[in-house]
Image (tube, rainbow, N blue to C red; front, side):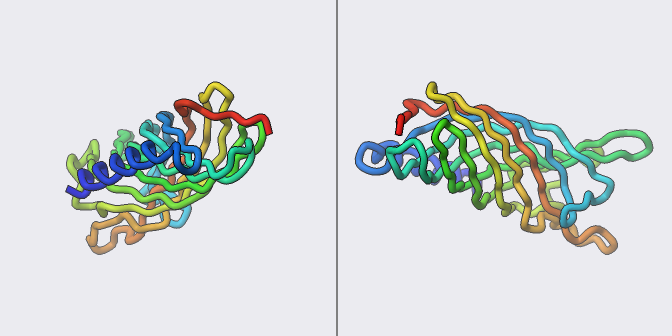
Length: 206
C-alpha cells in the first residue's frame, strides 16, 4: 500500500510539474538507467561478511532549472527502482540478499557551462522486495523504509543525452531482526553509474 501511494504521489507530481513548466522554471522530463554496486554496512564496515552485489537502477527524473543561463542551480527529484542488498559466502557457496527499493532522491544541482554538474541531496527509500538465496523471503528482517544522502556528478550533452555517477550513503538502520547476538545496525551503501536522456533539453550559450 505504501509503495502504491508513493507511486501515485510521484506520478501526480511529475504531471503537475510538466503542466506548469511553461509558466515557471525551465522543467525537463527525463529517463535514466544504470548499474549498482551495493552492499550492507555498519558505519562503513561490511557486516556479516557481506560484500558487494551488482544490480541495476532505472526510473524517471525532473530537472527543474532556475535560470536560463547555462550555469546555475537546479532541483532534480527522481523516482527510481534500485536493486540493493549484498552477497556473502557460506561453505564456499555464494548467496545473495536481494533488497529491492523504490527510491526518491531529491537533488540540488549546480550546473556548469559546458554541461558538467555536481549534485547532492536526501534520498527516501521504500522496500518492496526482500529475498535471500539461502533463506527465501526475508521481508520481516528489514525495515520498510530507508533514508540516505546522495553525492554525485554528471555531464549532459546538447542533444539531451548524459552520463552520471553517484554514491548513496545510507544513514538509517535497515535491520529489523531483533535476534540476540545479531548485528543491530545495518545500512545500505550504493555506488551507481548510469546514462540518462532529458526530453526537449534546453541549451544556453551564455
